[in-house]
Amino acid sequence: MDEAQTPLARWWVTRVLVAAAAVVAVMFALRLVFEALSELSHVIVLVVFGVVIAFALAPLVDRIQRVVRRRGVAVALTAITALVVLLAAVASGAADPRDP
Image 1 (tube, rainbow, N blue to C red):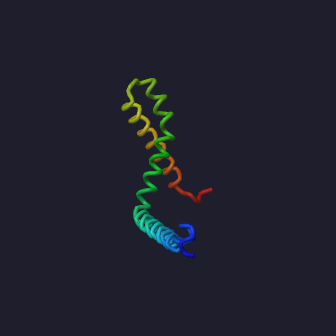
Image 2 (spheres, helix red, strand yellow):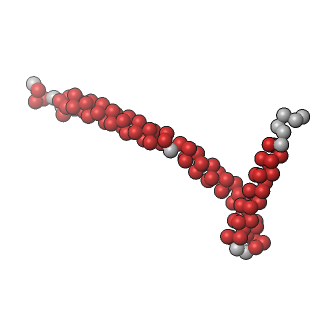
Image 3 (tube, helix red, strand yellow):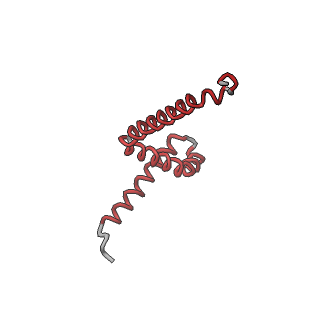
C-alpha cells in the first residue's frame, strides 16, 4: 500500500522540515544583516543625506556649467554657495533662537 502513494505523500515530512530549516536560515541571515547595518547606521544616514543633497544641487550645477563651460568649476561654485548659505542659516539661527 505504501508503494501506491504519490511522491508528495511519501516525502511531505522531509519537504516540511527542509522548508522550516530554510525559513530559520533566512531569518538568521536577516538578523545578522540587521545587526551589521545597525552598527553602520550613522554612516548609512550620512551617505543617504549626501545623495539627496547631490540630487538637489545637480540642477544648479547644470545651470552654472552652461555659463562657465567647465563642470568642475560649476561644482566648486555650487559647493561654496551651498556652504555659505548653510553657514548663514546656522549663524542667523544661532544668534538668539528665543528672541522674538
